[in-house]
Image (cartoon, rainbow, N blue to C red; front, side, top):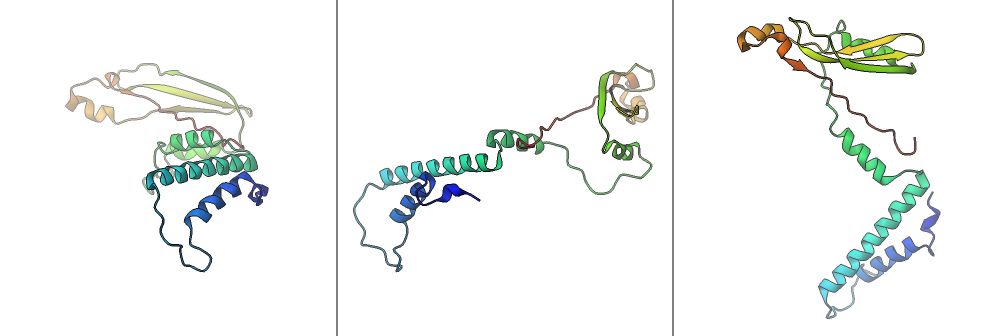
Amino acid sequence: VFTEFDKESQLHKVLSLISTERGNSSHGVRNSAKSCDAFDLFNRDLEQAVESFELLLKLIEQEFTVSATHELRRQEIMQYLPKIVDGGIESNYSICRATQMAGKTVEKVWFGLREDHVQIHQSEALFIQFTNGEVLAIDTGSNVVNIAEQAKIKPNEFHVDLNLTWVPAPSNG
């Protein structure tokens, strides 16, 4: 896959230099110890290792037409997505209708604050219209009416919002 691993490549030269200078001899016996400045040697080895990793990263980016910076940013976003746990969802829950979006093309999106009602919490609403004319409305639900009296608040003083996290497509997608 990687033609860059040719024995004449810069990557191969850097990796083989580290291997030659720090590895065991072919028959398993090392030469006698020599006096050397270990810190200078370590720093040089470290710089060569970094150089080889940078070359390897560049090679991978070119071979697979990806951007490491983009993919790292994407992974960082994805690690903060909510985690879905098994169970708890019943087939009659409205969230189950989300599967109807699969394969559809979005034509229009609009959103805003939902109209206030005395017995309902304040919230945002999101609408997605598909090219086939269907519209998906997404708003929030809560049990604020159940806790409003105990908490001495009016349901419409309680606010719930939608938290949208946009994860970009892979850089080679």
